[in-house]
Length: 97
Image (tube, rainbow, N blue to C red; front, side, top):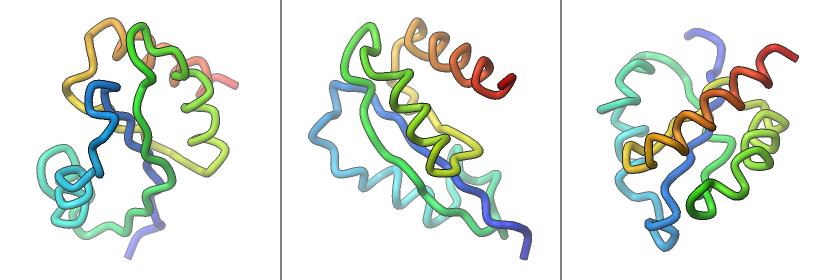
């Protein structure tokens, strides 16, 4: 089996009370966005929400997940386009360091 892939998941603040059932089930079954990990070992190193528009804790969340070894951060599809762009730019800036 390949090296373990470490991932994080960020969900929309509107789902703050979500226990993550659908995300965790999809990850376990390697469905949807997680189908790219079929036959690969995956470790979830972070799961949190964005803290509401305009994504108040995004930078700290990404830094913490990266500090925990996250190589990939999945964004829940409901996150607004603006928040998704901020996240993508932040992840890109971190990867340059």
